[in-house]
Length: 156
Image (cartoon, rainbow, N blue to C red; front, top):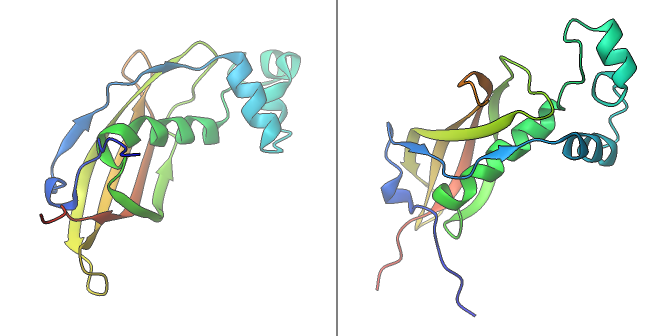
């Protein structure tokens, strides 16, 4: 079975390229409670409405920041790496400048910061991406810099 490739080949990922991602997602209370529970995070700030409402500066539960990060990275896959990546090599920087709340809608963009051919792997290169997630008001809520090992365009 042939699978469609929608990601970009190494040659297409030139530094300075900014990709606005088409997928948007409203984060629900169910999303947050499920993710927080399945990842074994007992933080009251995400799970205890009484605590979050009455004892925090936010006045309501916060979306787990790891959920925000995971959703943003997931939103980027179709237009960056689907079918063209070998491996995620790691994250260099992750920041959360503003919180997300239940009912907020997340959207993302990716910028290519750097790209170089691999010295040890023919037909592959290392690309540094900066993924940025924003809420429905355009407020930056997450920024993540990561490196991925990408395939070069196949030769025919």
